[in-house]
Image (tube, rainbow, N blue to C red; front, side, top):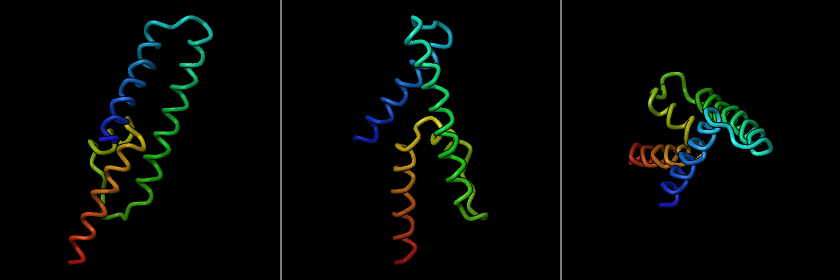
Length: 93
């Protein structure tokens, strides 16, 4: 439930930052939003890069999953981690 809430908030944040690109906010807020967008893009790209490089070479991430991880960040990583743990438990049994 909280992960879905986090995803929704992240969509709202992306929407506000993209809206600022087309219809800039007044000056002090405008610069803050620009910095926030650059920071968010860098951090989410860094998260995705770390995840891709930590995966075994035979295990590829789908483009759809990569896109979700880029936009939702840590919230999508938590969902992915839970799925990986369930798959590992099934494999051990």
